[in-house]
Image 1: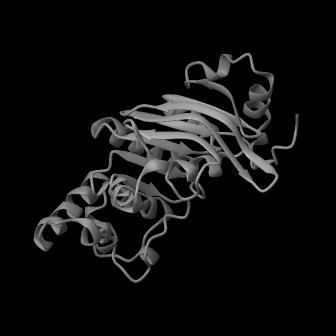
Image 2 (image 1 turned 45 degrees about the horizontal axis):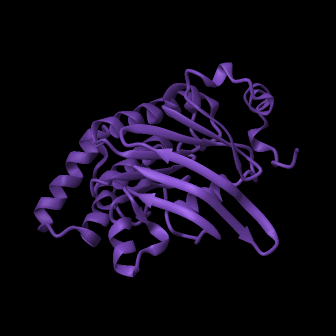
Length: 249
């Protein structure tokens, strides 16, 4: 579980996050939505320790990330899996080698053990036959599945996904959404997805937080989001304003 308490973040005179409180539970897909400039990316960067908050707490099972020393922070990051918007695969490595990469870096197992583990995760995401291909030889959807396998290779407690469906067609996007949700529940991961895709919101939003101008303006689920009484969120849903700057009051 991740708990965020009264989170503020400023850059000079510009206040980007304004007192966000949130709880993200294991075994659920937790979505953060909002228009461009709403503070979603800064929110996530604070949670994973890339930038320090101005004030507030981010607790990982009761452990405050701001109070961790370098050793503790490194240990926490080994418990995190990251799925980047552009997949971020290494072009010079095969699909299998890409999945093996974090295992080579952090696993204490032997080469044969972690190689087999990487193969097992590729099988789990349906890419066994693509193991020896290079990223340039596979589709965008296959690249994303490779990135997912790599993200979960170390058995993370926490999985952060940044726009996982970016650049994908609707059918492939749906498959990626289903895979993220299945793995979240199967491995009891605390998954946080930064997205603007309303299909993702409607299909796998176990918990949804809507951020507007650095504040948490709404919280609910895919079952309740369509019935929200928040006018700004309804406008966001109906008019597709997610790609416009968050400058309205």
